[in-house]
Length: 237
Image (cartoon, rainbow, N blue to C red; front, top):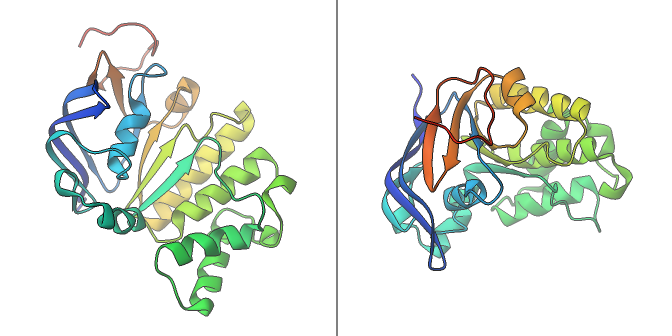
């Protein structure tokens, strides 16, 4: 039976003095692919940041992979992030070290100590994304698509219950974007991870069906009908 990985009730997000999103009522199960859409600056990234502990949940109730967001202390943030996989638009790979070293760096930072287990897991996640032969290559020698595959591999290291992807195809051409989506969905299924993905790319949303929620006018709204849907037009819900 599917379990909840996110549950927010009457949530509110502020950035400084500015209210970003209010009245957030959102839940997500561990077998779901959910798209988060909305204009640039609408608050998509802010919501993701709340989920991985970068921004606080200002009020309401919030639970992510068993962590209470309202009571989340700074020292608990690394523990929360061990339960999550995070994929960014700009890959955020360390350019001065190899692919293998990028993965080892994250494992050390999240509490791994056994070198043999670290090597085994690094190879496993690279095999999942089809890049095990690139373990000793530096990121600058890889294509954009390959770098995003590495960042997906990195997100899988701790067998996360939930993958948060912030515009993961934003810097890629359409063909590569499709490859990355096929891969993300396949490995999420293999590793039993839910995926919450912020995106502008409506062709991806139409090609790879999932639940869709939209941030608009400071509110989070479920979108039930995507036929001829224009994400930048005001919606009547």
